[in-house]
Length: 107
Image 1 (tube, rainbow, N blue to C red):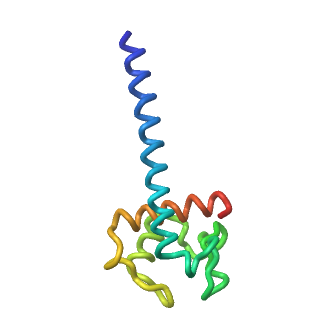
Image 2 (image 1 turned 180 degrees about the horizontal axis):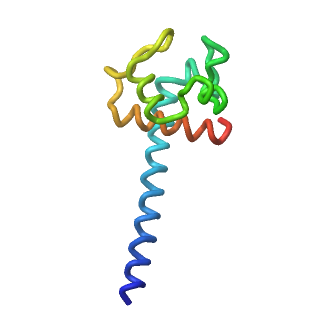
Image 3 (image 1 turned 60 degrees about the horizontal axis):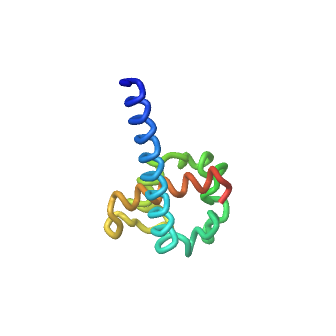
């Protein structure tokens, strides 16, 4: 009986965590569309063509992590404006997770 309870508990937690992740990605998508897609539509970069949000470019530019993307979005760099004063930390983290998810799935 105890094993069954533990199994049900673990299954419930797994399903719950997947729903939370999906909600975060959806939130990240909405924030991306509203704030980032003008320059990064489809994972591209309209200002600097080689600095896309696609897997190979993210790896080449050492940007293939939530931490790196979050830092870039918060502080900006070169032509990219800083969003740290405009977006909440949670929103920026959701965008970073969305960008990585999209990159891994080919935009």
